Length: 522
Image 1 (cartoon, rainbow, N blue to C red):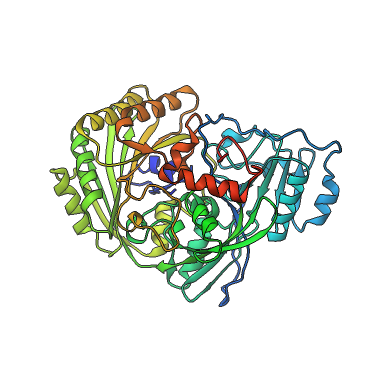
Image 2 (image 1 turned 30 degrees about the horizontal axis):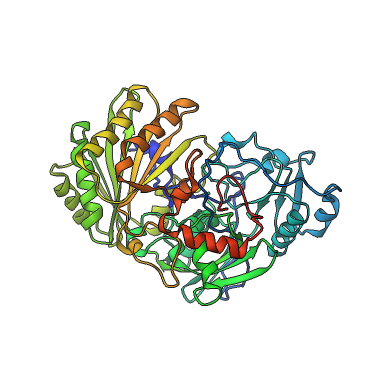
């Protein structure tokens, strides 16, 4: 997430709280993998040469099947002899965790504790690309379903699997920088990427959750505060190292295996292969201007209309996401957190207020350096595990009055039920509306923005809110964002006009459907 940290977003209702804008829940991640949040990755010392590595999980996947809420393996019956885990473990530089192994419980954890009960047959913590290749070959030989994990923030727990192999690429986190290009292992976390690039005065357009893995975020698209100015995270990829289902290594780019390169950029992780490394074209790490505008609930509809006009017409240097939060007292909290990449947020804030037709009841303006912004948006340098339920709708255009009323009504119903819930609207447009060199499978270039439905509640109340949200905006929805996967939604809804070409890529690079879960292409 594309992605702003939704957990912190909820805390951002108070002025003293840190604000994060996409995906600790993303990444939106994040429709791919992640590593155990308890691990804080370290980076290598700066290097002037960019090593060639191979990258972590990625590929597009789409099916009209209804995903189950618990990831399970549907692999065919295994071979007559049991897998030789001891021999496999001895062949690796990394480590294999079985249920009987000390450390297994922590090894298979994801960011969301909801998935702790899902028990893979084995967790493979890869130490290098060779380990990834060996794991793919071992799983294929022994007919095990394999799912890659980078940061572990998948909304549906897609980076774990019952009765299968979880391949954790979190150990692949080395970084180097040269001539504007960052080379980074698939397991690196976003905070560490930004801290490393800051040494060179550079950055990347990413989400904000500090523990999200770079792989899951990138492969699903990657939205954030720089989306309108510099495009999605996947748009900055120059090349990727990836192992396909046959265990073969590929170094893909716009000119080398361009069909696989296209498919990996924006279709989500775990569909076509396991990416082990990325090369990114970086952006300047400049000061950013921030604004935070709050309006009373009585102005809610006007704020939504004004935000839509802002998303359509504001300069590409301006970005702002709208938070409609259910309060425990039955009311709504309405605010926009905005950024200007020029460093001066006053003009952007004034333009939004003019579109709303009313001055904000509370208004703050600030300027932050690159790393100050990273820590502010991420709520610090790390993220504690937290349970949540979330979903999304992609807005194909501006919502009409009836749809806006229904959207606000869905959040208001949650407030009255004392369900902690938020509708968070991120703008697209600007550079994100343009195809990058080599193209990308991310299908929502013409969309106005993305709504994320988010609740930290447990049980049916959270699902009721999300279902009500989908129903409220159904006439304005083009589909959903693959880094905000949810159970019960047709996988094809995440791929829009890219579906047919992605299906062709799946048949070409994974003809036996080795990479398959309820959330992948068939």
